[in-house]
Length: 553
Image 1 (cartoon, rainbow, N blue to C red):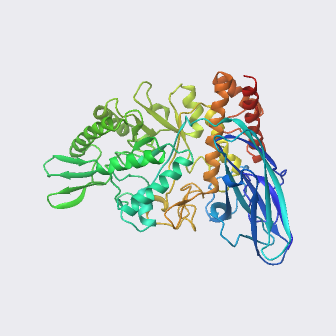
Image 2: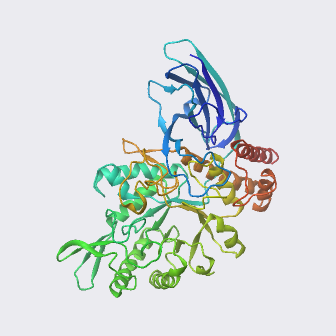
Image 3: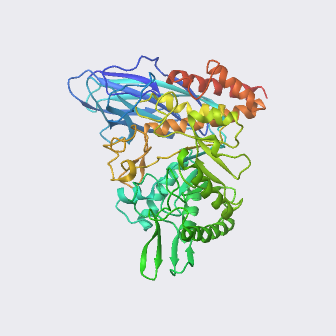
């Protein structure tokens, strides 16, 4: 058997084709202490049949390296609009799930390349220096083998703690449905722990917390599985009792897993704030839904309920030292026709929570935001320059199923560099946080049905592939990471490296000037380096600047 292999950076997407993208072989990289550094090995065989191949890794840092094979994911719906900066416009199979390698090794296919993903977890106390890896691929029963050497330089500086906040919305109902376990059962809590740790390990700092069942991506008149943390009781005469035990356990578990901030779920329905979310309570007639689509947002009964609930929530926040690490949502992505209603609802909630609980919502219309209010907008990434020009601080950013052209995103048909550039852009615009709506949305659009994420990456053909989730459900109750997820982790590590550079330079402006210089003089939401070769080169240059500044001290 004759194997063909090539070392690649972490951003190159190896499609199952006969040829690889024309790039230089990636044999050398650099990382800071405490960083997770990734690279790949692409391989194929010129035999006329598929063969199992063993992979061996040796070197001083091999023990700290996680080796996985890059699986393929079907993608049918790619986009409704395309620009020129895409891998393809055709549906097909895309590299995404990262699978553990079993004792049989990996499969080399004739006439198509596949990839192995190497992830080096550099210890925080690793001595500075250059560390070679030897990668050896061989067939189990033959002596034929091929070797490659990759060298990682560890810079003598530790990657600092992440300052920028990061949230990817987590859906409890998808966990319950996929793992066939009751919401808030002990099995459910155990699985939550696995997912929370995974989020924190990937640079996610904030968790969507369902005090009420989140009214997100739900068809009008329909409802999603109840995932309400608060246990609520009413006598039917306007008196309410609230049990915060489950919320207390949620906060404790999230903190133990490394998450530090909490965003309480939306108090009104999505895209218009016209109705109440589903609220379930124990009543004299038994447990039932007491508010929902039938409840107008201006309902006096719902307003009285909110006043009682938010009053108790404020006390909970004070008891658990959450006043500086929590926020609450009103409604997601209100549209211009809904602005008056959104403002009224926001004003009502502000009267109820005071300054103890900032309001944060996806708002892409500058007119909805007023300076000096307790809270912050989250604007779609292409509107960031508009909000920055208006000196809105602090400012968060997001992207979702749009924009489909021009900007960064995590779509499967985008080059990997177009996803990873996010961290450098967030630093350049001095963004305080980043939000995305889909960490594990394993539903069709509007949650009309469950989908198998291993077969549908586009919410049953309704969103661009890769938009709705970052992880796959593993059989053992643990998430399976995606290729795109690792790129986002790297993007936030780039941001942390730039924060260190700013500290060593003495100010952020100097670090940003260095970044702009490395990017060829320009960096914006629509004009940025995109190739893996360019971005890995920029990051290596940043590391070398850090190295020289430390040596000069």
